[in-house]
Structure formats: structure tokens, C-alpha cells
Length: 322
Image (cartoon, rainbow, N blue to C red; front, side):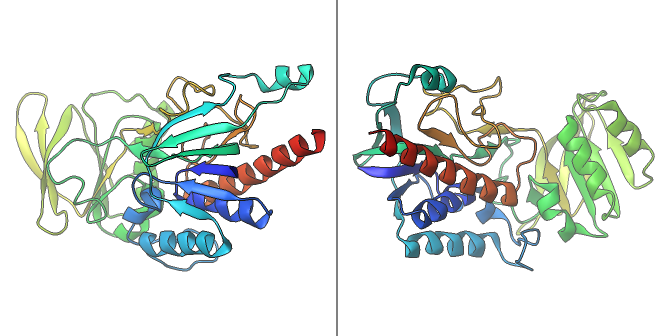
């Protein structure tokens, strides 16, 4: 029986482990893939306070080792199910407090075993939607990026393209236009889903060029990206030579395990405020899988700290009532 089980060993989950251990709780971190989350694919981290420059892999490894050295147990096991021992789900926290009810412990089943805890933190993150092109994954970090604010500075005075039609794509193009020589905005339609004011702002930038009614059909380059193949709606094909491609067609939260336990929004993100409390007592959420406006390395770490401290508070209050 653990005090806290954390599902996910990305920056949010490992930060939660550090704060949970430092608060005197027993902590188990479960990860089905590899530690670090999406940050391991980032060549260099330059926007984390206190760190001038470090690779994403180095950052993740340092965080992993810090949590482990403090005493957190970290197991590479895929979580299969998460359930309340009493069988209740989508439990309303406010109603429970009014009625004076207490949730029992939580059971987490993995590919290798069954674990129990007084509180669980979902830090399962989100995955980028891919274009589905050959070699897309292997070129991620070698010319392909899914985060303009993370990697944009590496393309200063270079030519880049942004693929997408929502507000994120428009914001990325606007951000990149401050540093890059040329920014091509590629969209499969002739109108944008994003905010019109962003479109108007982009039209005023001389280094921004629109490529509409077009889709990317191929990637050019050996070890690094040097260009993309584009197919227009009329069937015409052409090659665009660029140094970097930023794909902004959305993210998908990894929340399948949580959907029967807590409330999620229409896009699948776990509903929780800045206190990281879900609609179910004893279950907390941290990082990119939470409903929030900004998803960055710093906000993931912040969520991890908050979720852990809220879990500690919950456990201490529960113990005081017994």
C-alpha cells in the first residue's frame, strides 16, 4: 500500500514524485514507455528557469535520478486499469464533503502487478497529432517540431513552415516570424479555424507567406529535414525547401484510463483547476492531460508540485478524521 501512486514519468509526474517524497509520503511512479515524456525529443531546453541550456534527454534523466535518489519507487510497467476499491466513479467531490463521506483507497493494475494507494495522480500527458508521413517520427528533433515556443529559436534567420489552420498554428507562425527569415503557413483549406485577428496580424508580416488549399505529402532530407513535398487541391505538386517544419494540428490527451473515474472535457482532457483536484476525491491530475491554457515544461513541473501537495493535504486530512 502506497500513499501516492503517480501514473506517468514525464516532467509533471516526476516533479510530483519529488514533492510527495519530500512531504514524507511513500510514492510509486508507473510508466509504460520511458521516463521524460515529450521533452526527451527536444534537442535543447533553453526556456526552463535556472537552466541556460540542456538537452531534453539530459533534463529528463536528471529529473528521473533526482526523484529516485530521494526515495521514489519508479517502475516501468504499463497501467491497465485504475479503479476505486468501493467501485464508485465520477464521484462528486463537493457533495461528498457535504455528506461527510470518505472515498476508500484506489487500486491500480499494471502489466506486472496490482498496487494500492490512498491517492492517485494522473500525469499521463498528451501526444501530438502526426501528419502520418513516412519518416516523420525519426525526423522529429531533426527539422520537425511540434512546439514553436520550445524550438523556434533554433531557426533564427532560417526558413520554416507551419502546418495547421487553428489558433495554435497561427500563433506559432506569428511567433516564428519574429525570428525566422521566412515563414510559410500551410493549410489544407482556404480559410482558417483560428482567430481572425491572428490571420490579419500575419498578413501584415512581410516574411509570412500563405500556402492554402494544400497538404504536405512527403518529407525531403536524409539526416535532417531540407524540404517538403506539397500537393495543391487542384492536383499540382511542388517542392518547398525549408530548414524546419512545425506541425500544429492539435494534441490528443492520454486519458483513456481516467475517463471512467473523473470528468473530462469534450476533447478528453481531465477537468481540474489550478489546484489540480479532479471531480473524484483522492484523484489528482498534473501536466498536459489537464484542462489548461498553457502547456509548457514549466507548467508541467508546476502542476506536479501542486498535485502532490494537494494529495498530501488530502491524505493528512483523511488520516486526521480516522
